[in-house]
Amino acid sequence: MERPPIGVVIATRDRSASLAVTLRHLLALPERPEIVVVDNASTDDTRALVAREFPRVRVVALPSNRGALARTHGVRALHTPYVAFSDDDSWWAPGALAEAARLFDAHPRLGLVAARTLVGPRNEPDPLNEVLAASPLGPAADLPGTQVLGFLACASVTRRTSYLDAGGFHPLLFFGAEETLLAYDLAARGWGVTHCPEVVAHHHPSPKPRPGRPAAQRRNEVLTAWLRRPLPHALARTRDLAADARRDPQARRALHETLTRLPGALRARRPLPPHLERAARLLDTDPGGTRGRLGTDAAGTPAADAARTGDTADTADAAAGRRARAHLGGAP
Image (cartoon, rainbow, N blue to C red; front, side, top):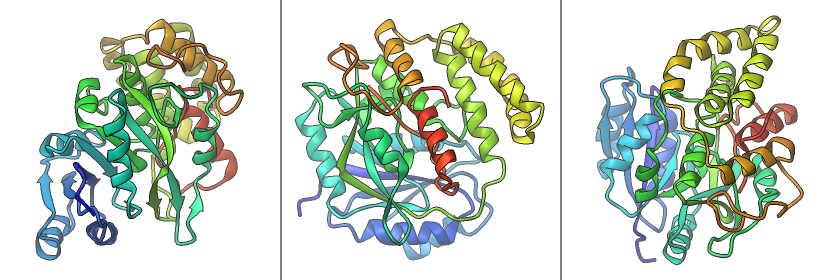
């Protein structure tokens, strides 16, 4: 198979054993993509392991943990037209990257592809797949798949120029539910964000809970509202979080972290253009059904939808549904 014009960026920290599994899968792909590992200041043997066992893989070593912003360092280090993201517990199916490159080649406005995700050794469909496929915003004539307003970061492929044009992942959010904001920013710049199930990613998350992850997700959902949504919507989301904080320690932590970051969010506030706000509002009320009710797409042509937080370790249906709705840009 001809090597496609695509590379893979992996952001990692202190998970060398899991990273090694991911790299073995990626290096076995028929596409033979260039791979860049961005190390978020690991304290384990991550850098030594990659240098010793995976000499084909390039490492960008950051002096401090930059969260999701590490992916932007990786995108800048690559010079391929298209960039796929993996986490240190995910990889791409054989042929998926070639298919993604074909879609980008054929659709110049396509900015990001949200893949179909299969979870664990039994390749179970991630619940997000159905949410993405049932986007109420429908297709666009000049884009493949179904338009969405979110994605799972470790199952996404982006056009390098569109990612950099939109500014990449926002540093204010760090990690946790960071995808929706990037989807908003891509769409606001006129780029298409779509779910293409023929592009397949595998995700093998650890069953161990990640301390602080629920709080980070709630925090970032509210901060995204302050960064891009109308003030009444942002205030309502903040009130909901404050109400939950009275009885829920995770919500209390999320509220504290939200208020700490709120001045930065207000300085960076840039409300969505009207057509995109209409798309986001539709997702607030109908995150996964009633296809095609919007006359214009998220980028201003014919229709938009979807995503989630990036933490499949929490597999309860209710939690998965809540995360999916949040990353659709809608209310949880």
